[in-house]
Image 1 (cartoon, rainbow, N blue to C red):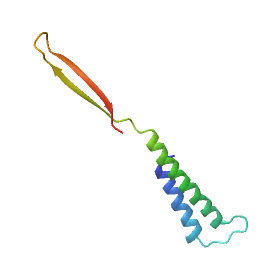
Image 2 (image 1 turned 45 degrees about the horizontal axis):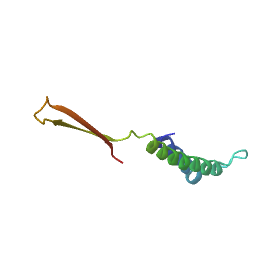
Image 3 (image 1 turned 60 degrees about the vertical axis):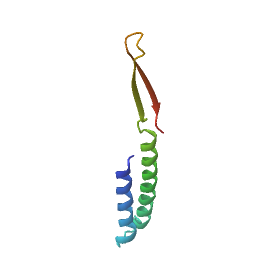
Image 4 (image 1 turned 180 degrees about the horizontal axis):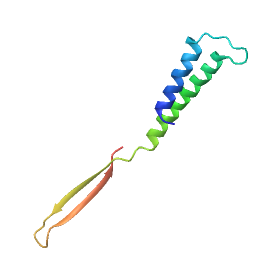
Length: 83
């Protein structure tokens, strides 16, 4: 779950918990709102963790041409991670 659906669940749950004033015998809308708000918070946290874990590693590559005069120039590549 990404962040968007988590925010949507949080908003829908808040609306049901705090703004809707309908009495139904079989359904407690306030409780459903609290459940949806909790699911939304969990979804946002999971989405943030997932985004951090799947982020592509950042790498830099440095290219250097070495010309020592005794042979044709050669290229050296150095890679390192930026964390």
